[in-house]
Length: 215
Image: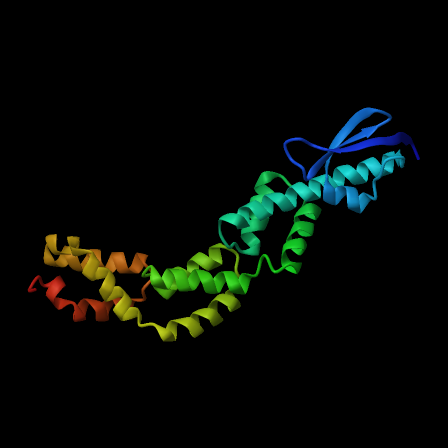
């Protein structure tokens, strides 16, 4: 096993106190995180071998991957699939991605059920139908059974017809259109929002004053 030398200095970096500069035989070898120092059991006077150096570099990659994932989560809650996909795009190795996902999961920083619940509640408040929400969460890699169960639990508490009626009340632009075109545009609008056809038909009937321009 090849010897690299003796660790002579481990000093905090000026711009980031959580990172350290590692010197071996008086020469700078690498920047390193505090976590990597602990995991590799590094200290001044320790003889460094090539195996140790490889371990240090690997731990650094792991630490950077975790920091990347934590930064993504600092903006908003994300699904496991979203984190995985972003890390793949960034070019992280498969084993480092798996390590990062396990790290986050153990600390309850990613939880697809919690993420899906928050997403559904937010989209309901924003006026979206269950079909659109189901599609969005499927696109984000959330298990379909989780999504289905949560939608069943959360949607009985709201009235899709009332949500759709409220949306139409805020969109007076439909009144400017000719009757048949108006109906088609309202149907298309509500369909894009994720409302099923039975809801769309009932909404159009209930808002006959909009569709027929009698209000």
